[in-house]
Amino acid sequence: MHKKLFIPGPVEVKDDVLQKMATPMIGHRTKEASKLQRDISEKLMKLFYTKNQVMLSTTSGTGLMEAAIRSCTRKRAAVFVVGAFGKRWYDMAVANNVPVDKFEVEWGSATTPEMVDEVLSTGKYDLITVTHNETSTGIMNPVGEIGEVVKKYPDVVFCVDTVSSAGGAKIEVDKWGIDVCITSTQKALGLPPGLAICTVSEKALEAAKQVEHRGFYLDLLRLYQYIQKKDHQYPSTPSIPHMYALDYQLDKILEEGLENRFARHKEMADYVRAWAKKYFDLFADERYASNTLTTIKNTRGINVAELNKRLGMRGYMISNGYGNLKEKTFRIAHMADTTLPEVKELLENIEDILEL
Ligand SMILES: *Cc1c(COP(=O)(O)O)cnc(C)c1O
Image 1: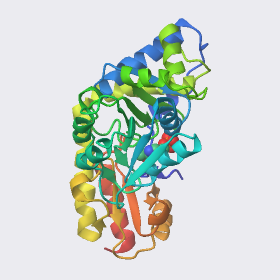
Image 2 (image 1 turned 45 degrees about the vertical axis):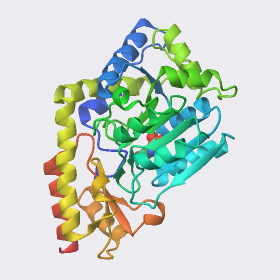
Image 3 (image 1 turned 90 degrees about the vertical axis):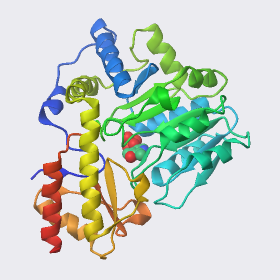
Image 4 (image 1 turned 180 degrees about the horizontal axis):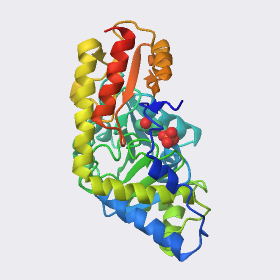
């Protein structure tokens, strides 16, 4: 039996979207390939409220995170960590020999504009990374407000991980001053895993020009220059099946209406949060609680793995806590094309199993 996924990626993918993955292949050096990739870029510019170039990468989101920190750090990177995915950015900087410092808060808290201002005022850093939506803790950081602070530091390249929020929450790249905004297909966008997306600003590209060793496959500047020269084609063979599905899904997203889509996510989040507070508690500081997933504190000491097993027999799957938070928390994703009635059905099943 297929288990309906309420995990924070991969998410349920609609059948019609899945079918697009089976579109007959075209050559990746054809006019059709250019058109497909150009269309996708234009639609994604709407989703991200930006005039910046959109680039795709046949990697998961992690690939473009590594590309950004490696390609654009000239002096030293400041990585703001509120959970496991923030920390990943620090680890990849270390692995690439990129000078880096980590600024971590207690998990469940947010990165604040004040924190960022204090760190940047030292003048030591020319790139920062912030996680928009931390999928381990369920925190959605105030990236718009952080962006206002970053604007005071014109040399700083602002990189934001929106992997689990893009498509489920409003992210205004130009207004917020984000230089590299990264996401993956398998979360709030509602597609299978395997493709990553970013927007890239002039500032980020200028920074990359000053970095000597940017790698090869994940060199942001090389990617950018290639797609400029070859009308949106990519230096190596991209996942064309994903592109067909993405192009189609973006039409559906724009048809739903961005504001409607974000409102639907907010409505599901409000419902799950109220439920969590009634029976358990929220792990995240509620002022910064995520609209695409909820991390629930296991205040009743239930056996989360057992709950998930029993949900599985009924055709549902949720997520245990991430890493050290396993069994101490559990996570319910409410993203992509999930609807409120589906969320209610899941929660009723949990109540039934736990006899709440
Ligand atoms: C899932 C996730 C990632 C990793 O993305 P992949 O596409 O699996 O590489 C990074 N950051 C956040 C916030 C995520 O939720």
